[in-house]
Length: 144
Image 1 (cartoon, rainbow, N blue to C red):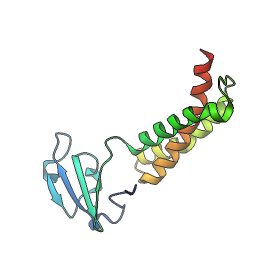
Image 2 (image 1 turned 45 degrees about the vertical axis):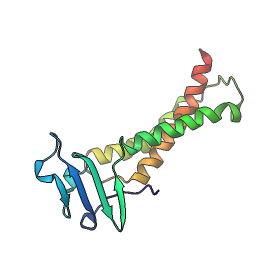
Image 3 (image 1 turned 120 degrees about the vertical axis):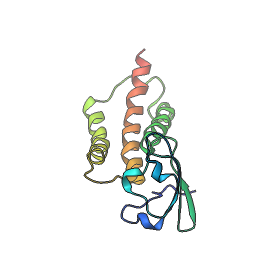
């Protein structure tokens, strides 16, 4: 199993894309395509991409969400083993804000069409935010 972008920006012609039309998408893009506009990616459901002999599918949720929640969970589980049980000292808030900056830059530039983010970049920025969130959640829960 590989975590990769099914449709590489600028190389859309290398992939065969199968979609199932939904009311949000364009009915012209129901079926299998060699040419598929960037604007339609993610709108139609059941996207299957075949590229270089591999088959890829969309994540059920955004890659960034998985990258936030999994590291956050792992950090929360590891926290008592690393810092000791019952930790109540909350790190200064500025560290949390700084951890969210890469995620904010990546998401904002993608939102406004300045560039297209990649799954690797989504995982990295999401993991930074998830790890930071885990470090704050555990002490806050211990205060209750």
